[in-house]
Image (cartoon, rainbow, N blue to C red; front, top):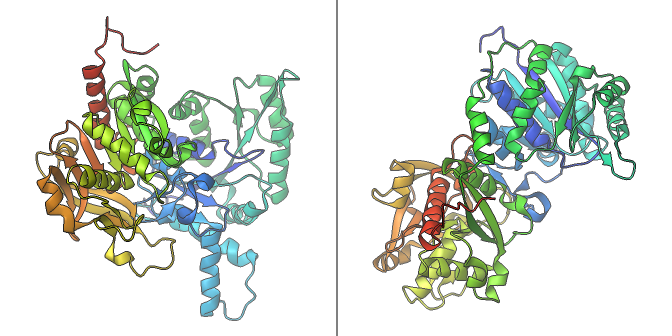
Amino acid sequence: MDGETQTKYIFVTGGVVSSLGKGIASASIGRLLKARGLRVTILKFDPYINVDPGTLSPYQHGEVYVTDDGAETDLDLGHYERFIDESMSKKNNATTGSIYYTVIRRERRGDYLGKTVQVIPHITDEIKRRIRNVATDGEPREVVIVEVGGTVGDIESLPFLEAIRQFCLEQGHENCMNVHLTLVPYVHAAGELKTKPTQHSVMRLREIGIQPDMLLCRVETHLPEELREKIGLFCSVPKEFVVEARDVESIYEVPLIFEEKGVADKIVERLHLHGHEPDLKAWREFVYRIKNPSSYVRIAICGKYTELHDSYKSIIEAFVHAGVENDARVELKWVASEVLEKRPPEDYLSDVSGVLIPGGFGERGIEGKIRAIRYARENKMPFFGICLGLQCAVIEFARNVCKLEGAHSSEFKDDTEHPVIDLLPTQVDVENLGGTMRLGAYKCEIKPGTLAHKAYGTTQIEERHRHRYEFNNAYRKQLEECGLIVSGVNPELDLVEIVELRDHPWFLGVQFHPELKSRALRAHPLFRDFVRAALEYKHRVEPEENGDNGLE
């Protein structure tokens, strides 16, 4: 970027209720601007006081998304990466806790020279510093999209909104744009859409000193012209900048809906950006293939948090991407691993064509996962284990094939006679839980001729990690002699990264989290090949009759 180019900033806020889709809206805008040749990045502000989501229960916050540089971040960063195909870093996510932590440490060092430390200017200055920093992280960006978590009116988000007000004043109106996502609910008893919630939401935003430039109105169906005019009039927003954001079948349709409504063109015009005509051909084809697959396959996800699907958000999306590359719809069957401790696995797994055991922490449901793995191994059903899934696969193999009675992980049974999974040496003296696991991207060398090598097409990869326990190398030779294949190893620490089975068509476990690198237009190779193996298994055990592909 030359010295004359001014970075432009788009601030995305939300009103009325949470979970309206600010993350998807931000990612979609980023996708459309990138399609116009602009260099884009996205920053997420989270108003909670946790320093990061690393110690939060998935029931509280969904999955923890891990970046290459080892940051534990909000799951919206996964949407950003999947949509704009850019890797995020620790600079792309900040919480209230991390901001206060930084300011308090400065105060303790005496950096403020005896001044009274206050929300204004010290907290707001730190927020503004984070916004500026993300614009120059790596390659300078032409557009920075900033999503503010929470809902306008929440006390937690006030410092962020005040910082944005100040930032826009400092940068100038021509360099900043405020996009407000709001709800226009349909009241069935009255039989009509209601604009008052949107009006009140914008009123709260204007009280803080921020005038929205564009309104994205979430509606179930169509937003009539007269209501757009009404909203624009009461909210001081030009009618053409009041945009219908209707519900869609797939989140990947949102950029196309926004393009249809001229969202990106309006942003380019408003911020005086210089981009070329957008190329969305590949994205349109991707969405078409999501909605029009020629076959389908059912895969079981056997985990601990199956009642809250956001706990496995990146896995769900990785299956969407892999399904497209296999021209198939992947139907996910959620199986709580605890139920498999009480009933036979075939009661839940006989109607699926593959089993995935995801990552997780804690002993609950472990024996159910081990029983599911044994079922997949003995029935030659495709199996994919991620992080804890690999560890459970190693335990199952050690117990039932190598006959190491009572083999376990020292995480769950510290006095086990055969700790085939053990604590990393670097974790032995760790006291604080937050940010202390093996986090971020690490190298892996892949053994030629293996399933992993066939999938990746190379012997050198990097994948993202989030764990404390590892395959115990003291048992490596013994397990290999029984038929376990160690197909991937970290070269620096000689840690086992990937395992397979010698006498199984597709059985693979990884210590890392491949789902974090799957992108909309570039499915992760392991998910792609797992889905392919599941389709082959389905065709083998359930031959299609009369060309029926199972789709209605």
